[in-house]
Length: 423
Image (cartoon, rainbow, N blue to C red):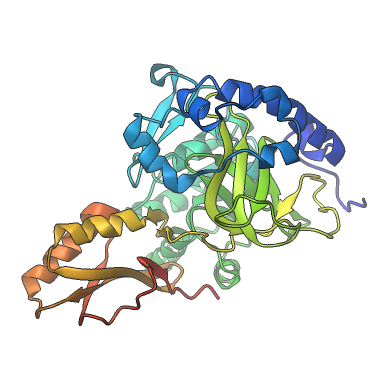
């Protein structure tokens, strides 16, 4: 492998020989299964499994899938984590509440979410200053960044989301070099800075997550003063899974997998691995002592990058093509998941609704969520206002309502339809 610039990675794990990495993962796998079996939920799911026999990808692929979409039911039956956490609640660092609600644990220890790797790959270094615009309210994304920053040794402005003018003023006064947050919020900040006539030119790089990042929006950031834009793939239950890298300022193809993630791409609904390079659902086995996850189906679609040259950044782990859509109807709107169960909850609150479908339209950073409702009689303004308020209460997002005649919505089983323009 020829690398034009010196290899600069967080640690030596990222540049291991791929065969050495695979041997290490397979050696650790039986220990992970054994530890998971000490949690009652995993003991039930993996009943009869001999940990010592799970020492290959083929053996792992024979185990049952546990779906992210199942977490709400599992946790309702056994609070707070569905019996999937090994560490008792009182010994954790934090407990988060994601929309659903779904409860996510955070254990103790350095960089528990493994977020230092994507941050380092994006150019965050010791002695730097970043503006953390992920929410600090109930969900873990902001704390993932905090853990990664502490490991690297850089300072954080805990900005959170919202208060756009304060965000602009903080950047103008404190001169952070890095933005971390959603793509849509950075665009709002840049547009507000232009309106205020504020200089935010110190912020030369951005690490994005929680939303899709179309190439058109990435190009818009470059044209508007943020030349180095990176995307990371993470979730509230798993933490960091994969991230982009660059060499000499040029992005390398694909997203590099985290060192503690064993990833499979499976045929949605079956759990069977697809051929290398084929698109399928991402299934993760996570080497986490507090919250081990075994064949955890994320609901996201991707594909392994095959027959590609080794990454010029020097990292040798497998790479995926990035986020390629959802395997189920759960949809992310403005960094928040909207679940079919939430749409059904809204409908139950309003007996006049015969049938409903949540439709998401618009473009990234300007998406619109509209609940299309079939109703038998002509609605009034009060009914519309009540439904809009229910949308806000249940999803924590703003939405609109549109009334339809009975029989208008297609009889195809869809509860949520994503019609956004990702070009």
